[in-house]
Image (spheres, rainbow, N blue to C red):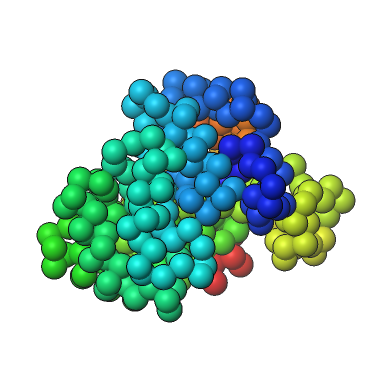
Length: 298
């Protein structure tokens, strides 16, 4: 979300204010290199991120590489259905590609009815400009509707990108995860480290920076409640020489049909994330984490 060295007002988007900017163009390049070397080749972006700067930078870095690029429509909460053709062409131009691997509806909007949007997405697939269709922040009902509309054109719904982590287990309760498994849809988990709360960097005394410090999860009482979870993550991680964040990511990977997409502002974070692919959790460890985070399953 923060890649691309945005200028002007794009420096003040919510993601930039919450996480701060990426650590420069060189570190963005190194982050991709270490990710690819570890077998991570999906990059998720959106036109909305840094006002297009993220798409441009991702496109530059991915050029000529075996990378799966995912991006999103619409470019603005105020966009309408008729903005779709131009937005698609603009994303293709910024990414420097003739097609998008995964084009996602960024969020449900009353301005953009799901059936009509899915038909436009299907048309883009048939035109060879999109290879797979996804949605993001869709409820189980909205996801089922999108799936049904695409099915009329013989096209599967590939994914639903929603917030999911040990400290945000709502997809297990609101029907989204069950619907994904039933329909064969991948749940792409954003904020898989609970915006950093699962890294072990923060506590009631060590506050997160930027806008994150004002979010409920980073308030003193909430951070105190998270400490037993972090202790369990550390305990499990010590068995594998892994960090709390790597164990938290692995817990998601162990879930059927779930793919976490942690962010990386530099190559160190990218390598840290990718290391979650190099070990597995036992069923007992998974259950221990499940039980320790029941309070966040609502």
